[in-house]
Image 1 (cartoon, rainbow, N blue to C red):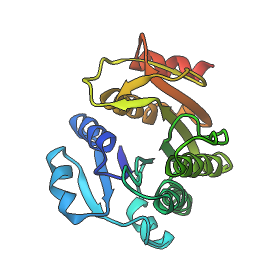
Image 2 (cartoon, rainbow, N blue to C red; image 1 turned 135 degrees about the horizontal axis):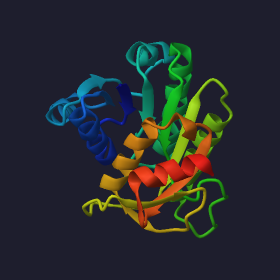
Image 3 (cartoon, helix red, strand yellow; image 1 turned 120 degrees about the vertical axis):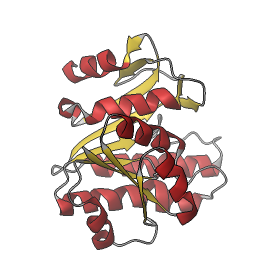
Length: 220
């Protein structure tokens, strides 16, 4: 399986690329900084320099054509202002969806966040509020598309703790934390589960094995 991962140098992306490579798949990470190329190659991924904040749809189409799936794992990251939440967390996600549609790549997995469908409380930091709104708009855009087999995964608070392989994956889980290792493992299994198309699921640590959790989610 050839999988294009936007935000290919991110912490979840690198973990996912390693998992894909380990089982013989072809991960391709889209990166903005060419100095990150070596980090992707170390985990078995091919790096493609493509700045989704400035790229055209046609440029991204060239990179995703022939892929089996795309994963949006990009983010403006801590320290960025509200403007980049809009250009990365929203606009880049929509650009990837436009390119996937144009290239005929139906499978799209979005790594989103909890709480993005509601209006942010008034006492929330303005930059974080902008992030929530941007992620919510990107998710809404994706859910409106009928030419993509999309799945949206909304992890809880991310940690760098070692993965446990045990998660809760439901439409609503309540707030909790989850290791990035386990998020990557869930995304890998979701890519293998076309029956999850059209579902938006929250993800935190839990008691279910990753494969069992994904299988159960397909039946709800």
